[in-house]
Structure formats: structure tokens, C-alpha cells
Image 1 (cartoon, rainbow, N blue to C red):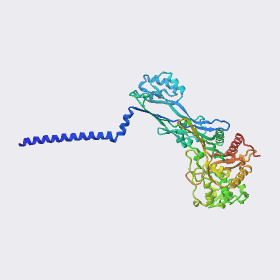
Image 2: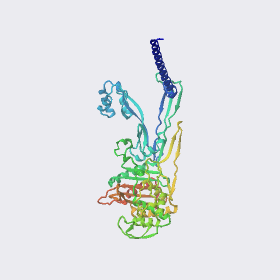
Image 3: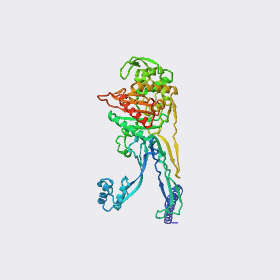
Image 4: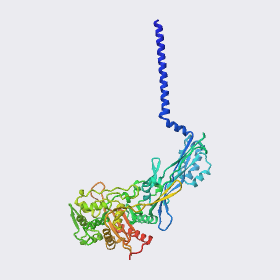
Length: 585
């Protein structure tokens, strides 16, 4: 065989090898593609094929409503509800005269025509939102214009009919990414219950995308959210907010808080904060701290309004009694510090009842020193000052007590008159309510009933029963402390809270404000407060009034008795009238 023939056959074999390799390569690619389509991505493409013949529509639930009660009405009043409003959008592709389109819509939507013109300046755009929350009246006005290129989408929006009433209790529904979600207060705490669960409708469709009425259907109804009926009394809430606003203005205070609690159930009758905000327009709030409910979120040194708590621990331990005496020299030297009475007076021989009546700091140093750090610590834990109150509101602040073994002698002394310890207003109210309730502290709560809505239209009601969270002191100690606090109201500095004919108990508070970034206290800032209850025969309410940084005037120096005391008295008078509570005398 010649060399030429051999080379020719070698070239033919080489081409055949290349062709074979190419065929195998193409076959491998095809096999891999089929394997990917039929095996790895089978579910995806099966669903895609199914979607060409099926239509799935999400069914959105109705968010649960929130209602307040009113003693003199059989109906409940909506504080948070839903309103069907409309999103108006433009379809720029179908708008022929953009200038005319913008000019006609602007006055109805209350928008600048230039802003509308800018949004629709996209020739092939099929969707450009213009304004949401448009009322039915405005929608009808737009429809009468017979404009081409305008569309409407119905939406359900959260609305607050009382426009700011109980805003810190309620919270609001805002955005979490692109999802609307409850924020703060009840809206945040009960988000899952209020939101409900979406459903769906799955049906067959024709080539035009229309439902086939005789085709296969699968329906899962949406589960509407639960309604909440509150312990809040609408009239009491109005009164609390009004009185707080007047006090904050009168004393030029930075802020203020009022809590009104039913000690027999733990239900909150009113909870007010100032500054307030309108939940319908929460986006207009420039300082997000305004959203915080200071009744549960702010910790502070309570000052003398804390004295009854430490006195209760000492009495409960059998260390002191109302008649126990000590001699006040006007100062107590503790751990290298000199502690004086707030008025710099020397009171001489005094009973423990006198200590509360005259709010004697050195007397409380005596009580705490006699009782000892470990017993005071354990007593404070029993009163709930080392854990959350458990109230059903979002963003409650956790406080913590350092162990007694870490206390210095000065810590033990100052805690007796409410300094060197941080509490939240709700903790102090719940603890004081325990004194009026035989020593049993009921869990504070805002929701009285939860109304569940079934998809078949049936509803069931879940009643929130009073729950004993802890027992701080025995009933005998509680009765003793209650009587001492009545004496404080009738004979002591707390007399500013008295109302004629009723045996009420109470205690004033004037506390220093710690420096934020250093040791010591602000030289010219105080927190004034008044906490009280009544009537002693059958306690129906506990009230805390707290003012942050009220300013002195030419007539008054700011202390609890003249700033917060009159507010307590006004609220107590309102409550005995409103609930028709018979006089004690």
C-alpha cells in the first residue's frame, strides 16, 4: 500500500473520530438537558404547565378590630378598625394628553399637577401608582371625568376612629419591608391573632385566562383576625389623657404618664402618655421615641413613692410595725455618704407611720438597715421588680435587680427612699395594687376578651380571667400598709390627693434624675409623682401620676404633692363619681 493511500485513510479516520466525538458531545448535552428538565426541575416545569391551565387567587383576611368599653353603654367602641379605600393609579401607555390628565386629577387627589405629570411621563409604562387611601367620593369624582389611563384598586387600611386616643396602648400597623404589620402596643403584641391567615381559590382557566365555571376548584377560605375587647374604659381614658395634658402644660414638663388600674382584676382602665401621637398619621412623627409607651418602656428612680414597698417588706418580716419608733437627727451617715431629709428638717422621735406621712428619708434608711440587704432583695423580687410585669403590650422594658451580695451599705440605704433602683411605672403600679389586694399581685393586662371568628361565620369568646402573678406579702401586712398609707393621705404630705368623704391611701414622690454618662444626678431636674388607691374598704382603683422634669414657678417649688397630687385628686374624684362609689363616711 502506498504512503499516499495510507495518509488518505488516516485523514478519513481522524475526521470520523471528530464527527463521532461531536455526536457524543451533542448527545451528552441533550441527555443532560433532558435529565435537568425531567428529573431535577420536574416539579418546577410541572407547576409551570399547570399554571397555564389554572388560576390561583389569594384571599386576604380582615384584620381584627380593637374595642374599648364604656360603663354606661352596652355597646363597645372601636379604637382600631378597617376601612376600604382605593389606590388610584395611572396607565401612562394609554394617556394621550398628559398635561390635561394631570390638571384634571390634581385637585381631586390634592396633588400638584407637576408631580402627577412627572409620574406619568413614561410612554410604555402600564402601572404608576398616584395616591392611596382615596375615599369613595373622590373615586366617583374621578370616574365622572371619563379619563383614559386611570385605574383603581380596592385596599383595606387600618384606621383609628378616635384619632390619637390610647395611641400608645394601640400602636399602629406599619410596613415591615413590603408587608404591613402591627408595631408597638396591642397591634404589635397581638399581631398573629389580629392578622388572621390568608386563604386561596384555585380553579381551572381557559386560554383567555378566564375561570371555567364547571372546572375543578379548590377553596381555602381566609381566616379573619381575632377582635380584642379591652379593659380600657373609654371615658376614663379620655379623662386621664386630658388631665395629663393639662399638667404637662402647666408645669412645662418634658413628658408625663398616668396609669389607672383595677386592683381586683389587674385590668388597665386607662394608660396615658404625653407627648401623644395620631396613629392614623404615624409617618408624620419625626422623633420615633414618641412611639414608646413610657408606662412600660421607661425605667426611672421612683423616689419616695417607693417607700411603701420597702416599709411593707420590713413590716412583713416582723422587723418594724406602724408603732416602731426611731429618733431622726436629720442626717444618716452611710458608707461615707451623708443622707438627709429632702426638706433638711430634723423630726426627732417618730413612728413608722410618721415616716410615711412626712416622707422621712432617714426613717427609711433605718427600716432597710434593720431589715437587711438579703431580706430587702428577696422582698423586692416577690413584688416583681426583677422581671417583666407580663402586661400584654409590645416593647415592655426588662429591669433587673443586682444580687444583694453586690450591694454596698449606701445602696441598701438609698433603695429605702427610691434612689439607686430603677423600675418601670407598670411595675410600681402592679406592686402597689398588691398592697391593696391582700398582698396578691394580679398580672396587669389590657385585653378583657378575645373574639375568635371561624371561617363559617361562627364566633367564640375567650374571657381573660384575673391571674395571680405572685404573692408579695401576707394579707395582715397588706392591711397594715394600706392603713398606714391612708394615714399618709389624711395626715401627711399626700393630703393633696384627698377627696372629701373617702378613705384613700397614697404617697408622693420627688426623685432626682441620674446623669446619663456619669455618676451623680442632674442638678436641676426631678421626676415628681403621686401613687394612690381607694377606697380602702373596697379598693376599686390604683392611680400613678408621673411628670418628667416639671419646672418650678414663682408660686410653687416642684414636688410630688403640688404637681402630681392635684392630678391624682381630679382623677380619683372623677372615678368615684363615674363608678358611683359610696362615700366612706
